[in-house]
Image (tube, rainbow over all chains, first blue to last red; front, side, top):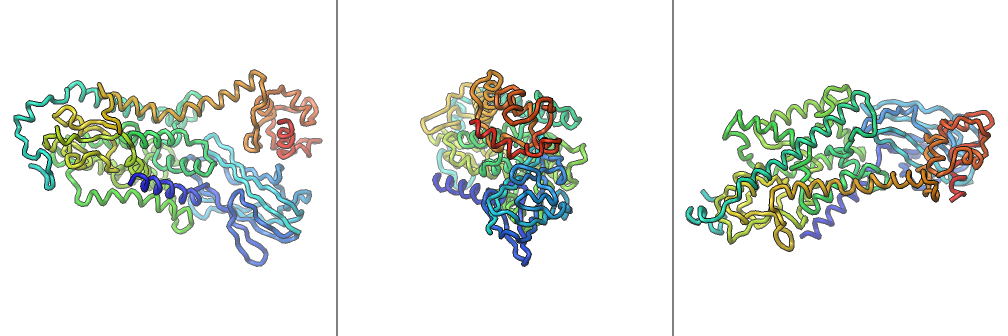
Length: 143
Length: 393
């Protein structure tokens, strides 16, 4: 009986951890209308030269981190992900437009071109006194 | 009147009851006092910390117990499971206490539970015997506590549009005068407090997601309140004293997930040793009622010890100029300043500038992310700095 309860506890936490892991969800849209959910830390394969749109949605949790989406840091391979910075392997085409589809929910889209083959890390960093967030997306660009 | 199904010593004569040694009044008093002291202290600590921070005063000495509210605890536990959480320490202590002693946190430290209990005391005065009468189907209604975790999962998975904060009454309770509390949470809080006038701890009984988790974990706790069937005189005082109407007089050990170990049953028992805390190897050495309260605080705070010591050890190492502390991608944060990084690496700033190839005279209060904006430092990105730091290790 006790073992059964422990197993259920582990299964419960294990099961919900995957969906409650963070406040961010990431979706990748390609030029052909295809859509992929992105999991942090798991590589996503991109085709060199292709255009993509990365959609980010984050929900503020109750810790009230006051860092706005615009103040959030986006680092590609360790440097700021900037618009039209063609020295970066993923070239950001335009500044993200942030909307608020619901209260405390923010959605933004990042159109970009996969330019340079290789494995690249995109970090999303919100530094707050209370809480904060640091997520890493891995993109593998293949020629 | 004995309840149906009551078997052991059901018809023991009252003389037997009198002949046995009753629980000492002083022990009962200690039991209640220690619990109340803990409850009041916890509410005051939270209230003071929250109020001071809401006034815009931020200082390290102001206590902030992260993960004390039901939703915060759930979020922190889940974040820690995936390795992203750093606020797990307090909920970890609560889980540890539940695993060993049962949900003692709910009965002694949870501010929301305490406030409901105090409102209930007012209700007892207002309604007398009509206060906290048994609710039909209560033993099934307790499963409603699993609704919120399920809804939280569904909401996060995108199946439902729901945010837990809309119902976070613990947050509403302490931040009610600020603009950031959702109105819905304030409405639910008001409803719960009004209900508390008639029913003991309605939130804990039927809604609290964290209480549901702790209640299940407590079913495997080795130490719990156990009834000695040979000495029990089946007077039913324990069951009548239980605020959650758990049939304590019918069970060998209290395993009901609603029990928050408030010990009202133990205090009500007229026979010494008939109802007491017991573990797998016998009775707990409870000379006075304070033992469980002390153990609760110790267990809940236990994980905070390494949490408090670890950063100090790192800082001490940095101050003493000893070996460089392990620095990872996460510890080299983009918002860290050059001075912070020098401290972390236990080098002076001039040496750090030399390592990074940065000319002297650069403002060391600049954040690492901003260095690439400086003229001539375009190549000094956070990625470059991380490479240099890693190369040194």
